[in-house]
Image 1 (spheres, rainbow over the protein chains, first blue to last red):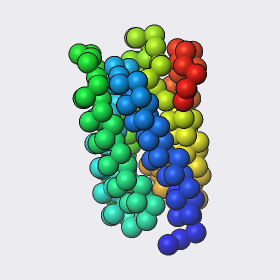
Image 2: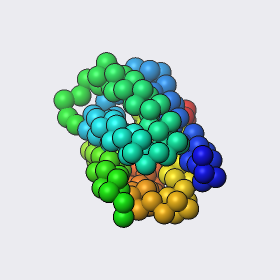
Image 3: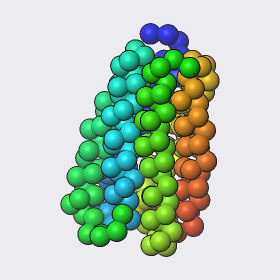
Image 4: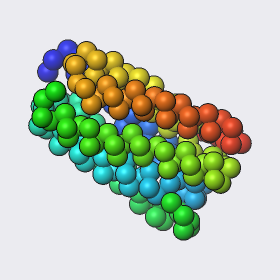
Length: 89
Length: 89
C-alpha cells in the first residue's frame, strides 16, 4: 500500500460513513420525502463503477470504501423507498 | 491519462452529479429538514481529502470530480442551512 492510501483511508471515513447519519435521520423522522431518489440511485450506480475503477488500478482505499458505500447507499435507498411517499424525483 | 481513468470519468458523472437533483429537491420543497447536517459536513470534509489524495497520486478523474464535488456539496450545505429549520443532526 503506497503512503497516499492512508490519505484515502481517512478521506473515505468521512465520505462513506457520512451516509450513516443520513440513514439514521430518515429512520428518526420516518420520512424520506426530501431525499432525492435520483440522487440515491445515481450515487449507488456511480459507486459501483468507482469500485471497478479501484479494482482495475489496485487502489486499496477506493476498493474498501466503495464496497462499504454500496452497502450503505443500498440501505439508504431501501429507507427512501420505505419512507419516501413522494412521486417526484 | 491511463485507460482506467475513463472509467473514473464515467463513475464521477454519477456520484458527483447525483448532488444536483438533491439540491434541486431541497429548493423545490423549500425544506431540508430531512437532510442530515452531519452527512453534508462529513461528505464535504471527506471530498476535500479525496482531492488531496488525487493530487498526490496524480489521478485525473479523482481530481476533476472532487473539485466539482466541493462546489456542489457546498451549495447543498448552503441550502441545508437556509431551509434546514432542524436542531438535530
